[in-house]
Image (cartoon, rainbow, N blue to C red):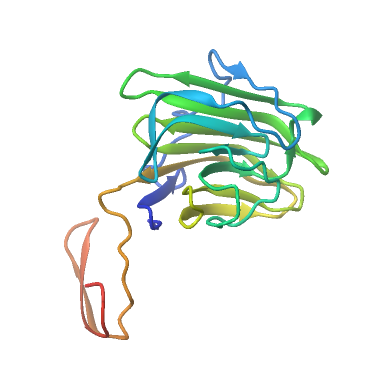
Length: 239
């Protein structure tokens, strides 16, 4: 799996043992609170029921943007999705369906909390929220889990011909995990569950690729592991 510089990896329900749709179903959120967002707007700050670790920073509050992302903190309502990571605002975000959306055209935005410690969650649900230009309503949900994982559910990820971005980004905009983007009008992703997991003790190491690799051999160790051996030249190499 790819790992970003903050130590996050992602797996989806197309690759076992990724998250499954039954585990994080798209039924109505029990006890959910409807958020009355307008075009290009942010919710009031919402208190999380637990401290959420995101790229090594601890957060107890979050805001919902009408354009399909959660914000830590609320620094922008940008309707122009960029490829993550990008230093331009918004930063510190979970983009579960970032595009120019307009809740005033119909649909509902709901958030809810649940579970018991240490397995609590916060979830936001976009159900039938249309794009500003020409409809194509989306169905998407994002879970923040108490263990620090993030799960995004794409019942119907859509585009109106402009970019929809799915991914996560650190608060400085320098590091992030770009999962997928599309500018193809209509539904480009359906029934997809994506789990982002951070291993802060083992972030992607900084290294310079060797100038030359020779004598590469591959030795199977088990059904799930191999050992690579090689001769390298160049400074600051990863071995």
